[in-house]
Image (cartoon, rainbow, N blue to C red; front, side, top):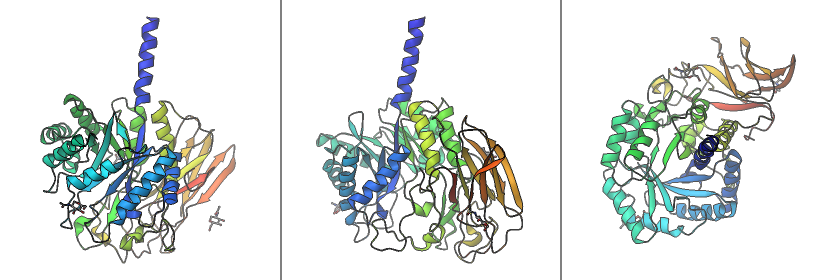
Length: 470
Ligand SMILES: *[C@@H]1O[C@H](CO)[C@@H](O)[C@H](O)[C@H]1NC(C)=O
Ligand SMILES: *[C@@H]1O[C@H](CO)[C@@H](O)[C@H](O)[C@H]1NC(C)=O
Ligand SMILES: *[C@@H]1O[C@H](CO)[C@@H](O)[C@H](O)[C@H]1NC(C)=O
């Protein structure tokens, strides 16, 4: 009996320990100004969170003229990653069809072969892992295209494990998980693994569940697939292309999505993905960036980015403290036990206009699902000892919740009903033994005076550490 239970315990440990890779989805299109050193800076910052690699999303470089620089940046990314023990995979963006240029398997195979010998090229078992965004909604691609890519890679003796994100199935699985997962496997015999892209509730005011994740993972298993099940985790979703098309402006119910989804990972034995993919490191326009804000003004900065209209809801809206939440749960997921809490940190976030505000620019009241988010400041507290977290905004003063060293706790304070044009600034404090230990104002006020419809939150930190998420 004794020996049996030791073996059972050891294999339970092994199971947890084998599932440890975390990738972050990375938009190569935002790296025009990057140098090798800038890549290293991003990789260092990612490693501090427990991220092991980037999944490099890019569109065909001949799609728009002048995108050929992307292959040079990928070259730099591998150089940087090799020196940092960091991993890279490709995520071929196969959703983009605005231009008449599409990926072809010769070019893709060439790019995979280029770095097949690199220490930074991530392998699943012994095969190079390759992912996509899409591939099922553009006629030029599909199962035969994927099979051709795999056959080509076999021919070059660099076999791949293919784990694409096929959005039709991920969207469908939100309402019909079992049958969508079954269709995926019968329609796409070429795939080895799967990335379930749908990390946000789909046009519903309800919390995301892991049921679709479970369905995809068991379908892979039932079909004896050897590739990874990749589970997507994201903090937010809001985009406004401001092009007059009501389909191009939306927000997903994301108020407490990030900690909620992470909690499923560490508390729910029913879902144990092979890999986690954070959506995203630097997709600013969809409001789910975890990276520090890039440089907006200095054109010689190595992370200089232009965002056009979409900058209206990104500039000034730091998300970096969300990385504190990611770091905590990733360490828990990797080690199988709750990390020791040594600091006092409260991460808080809020949108900057009440949802009913009509701004003078952007898609005004046309933002799909705009009634879903709650008008509130949300907080996630991680403190080493019993504390009271107090939150105020305008006339809603001193809303408190308790936190202690046993793990994270959450609280909120609603926006007051009388938000003015001048705005009201959220204040958050950590109190212990009747004393205020830490106190901070948000970097932005909530106001009704706005020049652009904006459902992207700003994220702050009160307590130990810095706004850059450490
Ligand atoms: C394949 O794609 C590459 C990169 O977009 C392009 O340069 C090349 O011309 C394409 N080849 C064919 C045969 O279309
Ligand atoms: C989502 O879950 C949170 C708990 O984190 C809960 O407070 C909230 O009410 C839920 N939202 C809905 C729409 O059920
Ligand atoms: C917060 O804002 C108030 C009101 O503007 C100001 O008096 C106070 O000094 C600020 N506190 C901190 C810590 O920035």
